[in-house]
Length: 514
Image (cartoon, rainbow, N blue to C red):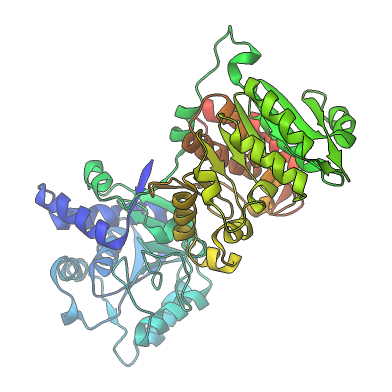
């Protein structure tokens, strides 16, 4: 897992590295080298506009401009402040840039912005080094004008550490911030790199090792982590040749009602494609035959029903039969009828790991503490609306601070919470959060959450912890959709296609291709 740092922690990690014997000038040189490597992938020599603020971020840009010139590029350097405002490492790199013949233009000069406009129109790329992690207020004055010129130029932007105008510690996207095509995060990703909508302004984010020891980064981490393919690979060991279906878990799925049988079907399909050994769908009797016909690889257990939804009599049968299973998924398409709510209570009473989704969450709106009474692992998989109902707040409030909302729900429910959405979050009751990097707008379609619940349930049944099943399940789900994006673009996905793409993703992951 890559630690995600806030601005204060990043400054402390920088200071740790310097105290450990790495000169700050060396850190800046390494950051500049990372910028040059990233730019070289997109631009073969040519003109580059480099716009530098007066702080450390500007120093990174000035060092990068010098390295670009030495490699045959034609950098035009622009300073947000007068040259005598630059201090420390930034001032030294300004002197070095001038020393090799570069002629920085101060935007404070009368013709500064006209020169910037000409350079932007002639450049193949822009390096944004105005502000980094230290920004704590909206862009104003010349800084706002410079950011606007960069955005208006239409040129691809490479951001040094943080696109100027974003706040490193937040996920919002302030008006006037630079929109980057690629961001090189120095040392570690920051919160703005992983939380939407700020992440949309960062473009493709790559993390550059600039010489800060990993121990210093881990020590300063803000209890937020970024999942990497290697982390998920480690959770999904290869299967032994002598394996049999019982080795990979018996999963019960309590789902579906008249008119919503598809939710149960998609959850079961997701579970089977994720590797569950045996899947049994407990459902209203009237839809059992349709489910078996659509997915004969799963088994069905018809339960007593009333008006197409589970009746209260179903709860007693569930309480007896769930003892034979390793884990359960409850909620997709279940309805909120009184009998269905009783069935949810029966599932929660079983001493097996449970994934609670959809109507199993709605049954306890405003009462997340009900989940805290369980004696086995629990995963909640809400979308923002469901999370809001559990927390007695609106979906907009959840989205306004997804990190805090996921943590609050995990703490109150004493459960692992997989808050769905762009950059899904896996929050643990103690406050640790893992950000899922995979996904695509394709997943914004009916049924994709049902598939996810089945995937997580399969991993739980296979023996993974609630946290590990959630991290791996979210990653596989998003990666499966991303694998379909080349063919489908960003719309038109059928959710069963996500389930069917999971085995290919697992195969590629085990081969080290993701």
